[in-house]
Length: 169
Image (cartoon, rainbow, N blue to C red; front, side, top):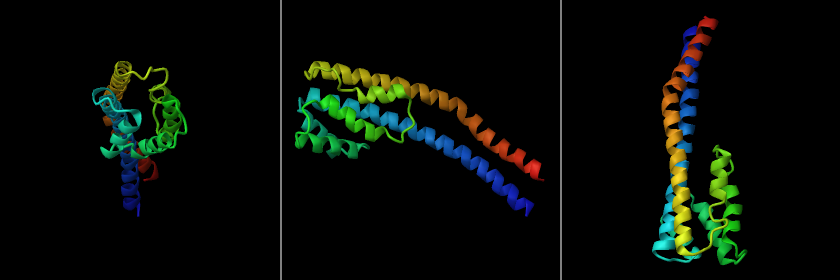
């Protein structure tokens, strides 16, 4: 019975560590998707010179990871709910970012992507690429931080569960 308890405790400790690492990996992938989507939007809006509605439609067709986000924006644009795209982006971003554990700075950066931008192609392109680069720097910093902590998290999970096994033994 004790052997089964030891095996269970060790696997539980390692499982908790693995879930922490996988959650961090998902956070980095989410940031990477945000970065890529801003670059794609800049490409469609500035290089192809598509209007906002068509650029968002292209994002849906290309199969972005945030399809539900772009579908909600596209629907509201077609229904002419608002003329201010920055305000619409901010409102829909709230639903996208709920449940995501990112810093407030990154959330505000994403929400304010189209706020206070004159909708001329040059300004949009500069702003979107700038925000994409900021997200890239944040992602790289998180990757470095998590890379250094990964071994620590795994070993802590193992050693805590091993300590509990010694106490119960």
